[in-house]
Image 1 (cartoon, one colour):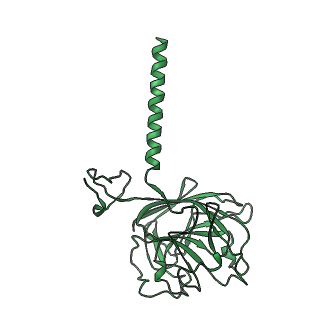
Image 2: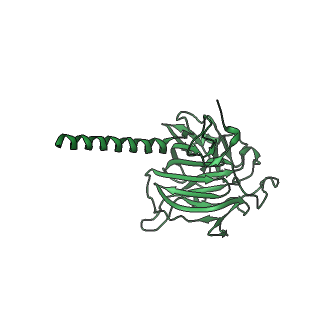
Length: 289
């Protein structure tokens, strides 16, 4: 009887292990790295005052399997050289994940508000549609902040809206930035940041595996962006897709483990490339025998 009981326990543990392995495999399925760890192939820079593709001062650089933002090659003050590094493929329905940490000091002349401040832009306009003197891309931002004064709250994972609007709690939000419910992170620790974007409907911000903010209906509108092409800024137009970009605004920062899970694809179980995790159907992508 003891042998039978032990055997049953072993079988139960084995089955439990298979179940956990299956759940882990499903959770990991579909993730693709966006950064090869060696260079910036597949990414494009746009820095204020410079043409698209000009990575002035080697602002964005690939070192130690990290994308680093640095200003040691800048002469003089910052001069509002706000920059962004764009992944070359646009997305509409997806789950984006990365880790970031702030390092070093704010570059001289950078605005005070950019201290320990950066972010990732999404649903952004194509950088090739930005005039040389446009300062920010029309986009939505998941803003990253770190604490400056001990005991003074400064949450991260906030929403900012250069040239855009969002709806929050059923109405258009009338501010530029919307604070999340995250705690304050100090120093140069790595922080995990995720954003789930479902086209022009729902957006969720996640920090260290906790949901800290959600809102709906990202759309073109609002202010902040200057010297844009008026044909691009069509206020009221819902944003169903766009580019993803890492930000540079005077504060050195590191990014790593940048990956994405595309949630748009073939939802027909009969197709070879059907995946359970797809949320948005794309019949044109289906592949059959």
